[in-house]
Image (tube, helix red, strand yellow):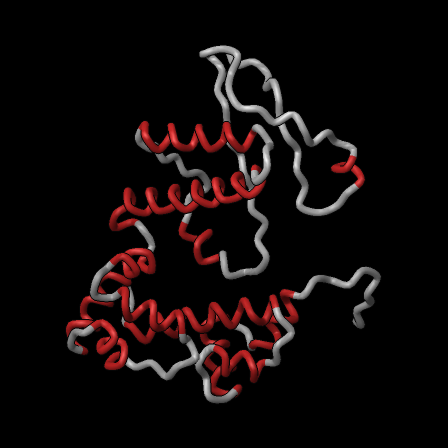
Length: 238
């Protein structure tokens, strides 16, 4: 039977009276008994909506086992951070970043063909150069031929490999990514529809709005309005 935890830390993302009343110290590393288990627990607060593509690809729970050398390094770093010497907070932040990236990468590699297409594409030697170019410059007027040129292969070979690995043709993927980015900008920024259209590669707001409505089922304006938080005490006309 597992006993209660012996020590813990409470940290809050935002200021609150309840949080301020808690004791935030007492972090330590190591166990008084070989039967005890020490855990490193971290939480991330999303600052926008660009993370949603990743979250949609993940199951509710991931369990990834690492080899003994990796775990030993992790324990050493955690123990050093727990001493709260100079630089401990920065070390713990980087430690959690490293653990998150390694966990996700290990899980995607273990998932094989079940990993999301965008991850497999970025790991593919043929598709990776083209995908990096597109994601670095989404507003550029990319074509299958120009993407294939970035990868150094023929247009036909690129299109075939892209469709097989990513599960959709190149231009369909580009459209999806552009409109997902546009959706995030509509929610997270005050940019106009015309500004967002240009930033994701559309020459005019009309063409962008038509494509957005086909993809999301709503016009950009309605999408932004639906995502806006309700104003307390606001009245609606009947």
